[in-house]
Each structure stands twice: as C-alpha cells, then as structure tokens.
Length: 445
Image (tube, one colour):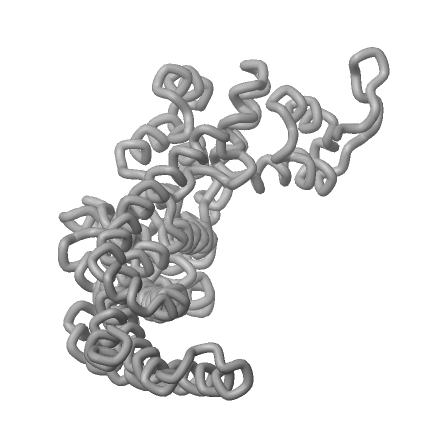
C-alpha cells in the first residue's frame, strides 16, 4: 500500500526501501505514483536496481519527457535489455528518444540474441593504440573517461581495424615510464569470448579464470565490447533459476514469481503436470498386469507406495547431482561411463541400507503386532530385494538421463525430479512384483 492520499495525490514522501517492498503487489499506475514520490537521488538508484522487465513496465507508464530522461540514464547494454522486453512498435518509439550515438549502440546490441555474449556486452570500453606512448595513452584515456565508460580498470589495445592486440591495466600504465610504447607494456595473451557464445558458457569462463571483465570479439578478432562481472552475476542467477524451475517439473518463468500473470503461470505449470500425469497412467497398466498377484496377497499392495517412492527419491537425488555437476562443468559427456560405475555402486549401497531398514521394520511389526501372517520372513525378503533393485534402477536412470538429453542436444535440466520419479515408478512396480513372484511363488502366489 502507498501512503495515504489527499484529494487523489499522495502527500507523504516514500523511501526506496518501502517502494521495493511494495513493488510486486502494486498496480502499474501505483508503481508510477510511488516512483514519482521518491527523492531524485533515490529514484535514480531505484530505477537502476529494477529488472529490465520492471524497468520496461515503468517506462511504458511514464510521459514521453520522463521516458527520455530515464532511458538516457541507462548504459547501452542496459537500455538494450529494457527494449528487449518491449513490443516492436513502442520499441521504435523509445529508441527515437535516445541520442544518436547511443541509439546506434543500442541497435547494434539488439541485433544479438538476448542470451549471447553480444547481447550482454557494453560497447563502451577504454581503447588505445599500440604505437602510443604511455603518456599519450593516459591523456587519451582521460578524454574517454569524460564519457560514460563501463569500467576504468583496463584499457584494450586495438589496431586500426579494431582487432584486439592486448590489454593493459591502468595500474601498469601509470607505473610505466611515460615515453615507453604501449606495445611494450600491454599483455598480449588476452582471454576473450566470441560474440555468439551462450551466456552460460561466458559465466563458466568468468568462474574458471577468476575474471572481472572479458572482451567480446567477432569472427575476425575485432573487439565489439566487454562483459563485466556484474552482468554475469545476473546471468548466473537467471540460469540457476531456470534450471531450478525445470528440475521442479515446470517451464521456466520469464518474470519474477509475483510479476508472472496468473494464466501464464498456469500454462507453464499445467503442460509439464499433464505430461507427468499421463506418464503416471502407465503405473495403472503395471498394476493391472499384476492384479492376480495382488488379489492373492493383498499385503503386497501395502508396500507399493514405499517401493516406488524409494526409487523415485533415489532417481531424483541422482539427476539433481548430475545436472548440477554438468552446469558447473564438473562432468562432461565423456564422463558417462565413470558416472554409471559410480552410481551403480551408490545405488547398491543405498538400496542395501533401505532394504535393511525395510526388513527390520517388517520383522519388528510382525513380532509385536503379527501384522503379516506366517510368511512375514519371505515378505521381508521380497521387500528387501525389491528395494535394492528399485533404488539401483532409480539411481542409475536418474544419473544417465541428463547425459542422454545433452547427447540429443536438449537441456539436461529437463530431466526433472518429477519426470525421473514418474519414469522410475513404472519400472519399480515391475521389479517389485517380479521379486514377489520369485520369492513368494508357490507360497502366497
């Protein structure tokens, strides 16, 4: 809720913290009203802290003069992110509000896919020539610094065709003798990324090389811009959120939870939920296949939830571990055999642990309550063998499915925990009743 209104206008000052807290629950017109109540200094920080989607929503509700003011506060890469959240027609109108140099920069960024390195980069970076002296380079950088550079920690050395030759830190530049050529001060081995590299791979390079900024080049080695670590923090959060959504068994949301429309939320959840429901229908076929066994020994039905949930849980554990290891670059497709060996041993160990617990539980209940009749020992053996088999199958299939999906060129995170559990349920029933036929055949069956 906004502060009290008097005659339709809010008279109380609002702090940025208060507005941040209330923002997701406010209607668009209330967001605009609250934003206009902020102190100008706070308003600038608040606007910069909003997501691109929220910025786009706010800009769309402002008057043209205000739109121009706030759009011009953004760096080109941030302005491009905002405009990507806007429909094509208003996008052109907003572009026209930018000054001509910024408009060219933003148009160039909009040509890249949103999740490519080119879509993340800022075209505003410090650049110098290799034949400059150190003093000349410092003077030239002083001129560039009067503009809005993305970072002032590094200067990139480019030739006449804008090809990346090297990089020099400002510290090294100021420490070098003034008459020394830049080519003798710069570092020639520069880690760079191609403009079409996926943002997730860019984030991995940042982590592996412990970088704060990385240059982006085209196919001919011409430098196009830089990606900074603050951009990558947003990427890591976005990618992790997307993977968590998929692992949870739904399509990734395009906006924060409270800003996602109700029907959009239902659509993203219902598709996977319906698919999982149809998959679970296969368990009814498996149960029907063994209905005679269930009719002869009704006690078997008591343990169906126990058996299939154990397999599903073990499979979900394995798929989550492997998906995360793949996301962090800890495992590759070539590690499939090692992963399979590891998970077979893990599945056997975990299955034996659960089997021991299950057997003890049945025997203790039998001794106290006489719940399972004269063949409780054979029943406990059936449950024990089933748990070993189902947990082994769940663990192995949960670990291998993400690798299989990546081999097909699909997102490994699609091997969600609910999907793995559904797949394991059907096979788990087959394993359970097969073990029952073997152990209890001629006795209860």
